[in-house]
Length: 257
Image 1: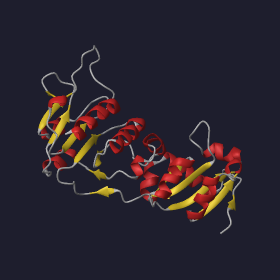
Image 2 (image 1 turned 45 degrees about the vertical axis):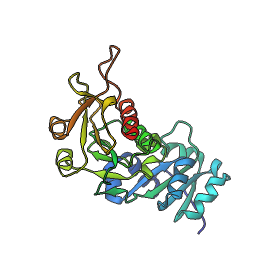
Image 3 (image 1 turned 90 degrees about the vertical axis):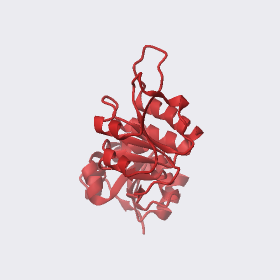
Image 4 (image 1 turned 120 degrees about the vertical axis):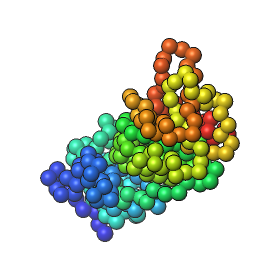
């Protein structure tokens, strides 16, 4: 099918791309989300995610990646560079953007002996994406998400560099209830001097490390629901670490066993 030519911001498809980019409700309602850039679009296609619509700017039309993605996309449209710049969220657009079908990454069961991070109310897209990238790199079995930002928002996807297209995800509407129904030990990561040193914990049997909101930490109910409270000892004057930095250290300790 030949590519459709779109030149107006008022076009229905352009409006839909803008809506999916900006609204978590729209993504949930349609079961679709937006990815931008050659690498992310390519990662989605390589992961078997259905590409519903490919949008290519005039300056990117000759790129090899554009041809590869056109071959797998259900539909393709071309737009002037000026119009692409209006729908892009990046400062230097690559000219490739796709609307993809939200993948069925959600899992209900955890692997016996598995190693997981549970993220409660993480609100910063950059933190969520970075944590996912670290978790995949260090070989965790998945992420448990309870509240917080949408993992399929464009900002989260860019920060994760495709990790959230591959890493198994578990959705927990109530993290305390979820933890009580698991056989794996759970560890509440807290900035408290009376908590156990995370570096001295034995994670050989796997487990779930819970990390809370950037400003408020874990909810009291979740903290009480965990088997143990752990902390990363602070030698300097800082009271706590950024959520993504803490997650990186805890991921390493968890996978080290």
